[in-house]
Image 1 (tube, one colour):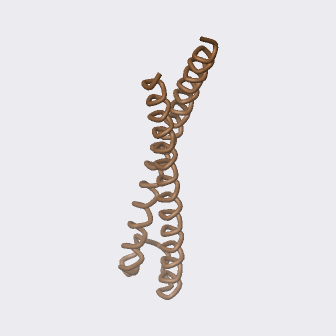
Image 2 (cartoon, rainbow, N blue to C red):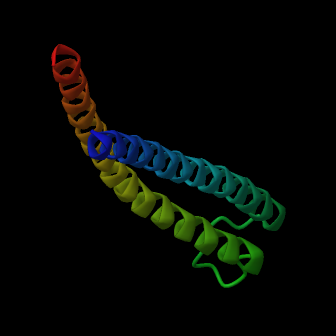
Image 3 (cartoon, rainbow, N blue to C red):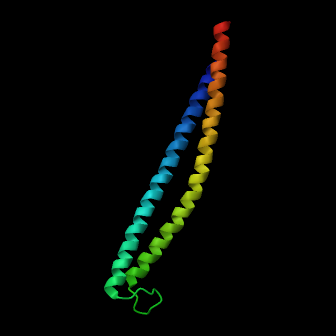
Length: 116
């Protein structure tokens, strides 16, 4: 049956696509975490140079304030990507299960054709 073969190929494509999306999310999260760490290091250096570690202090370095805000934004983005990653993992599991079902039906149909 051509339609079952097409269905199996479609499901295999969907699995591949879900894996690719999950990998992209993980890559983005890794990049954001790396950027956030670099910003934290820059903040520490700037605070050390200024001798002021309190962001509320009137003489707190402007660069450190901006870098801290950027680091906070990155952490928020990482949390949002984690939610997307969890959803992508569930979608991948569903796609794998759908592919397995379609492949099992195709195999069953193939066995029935061989018997006939």
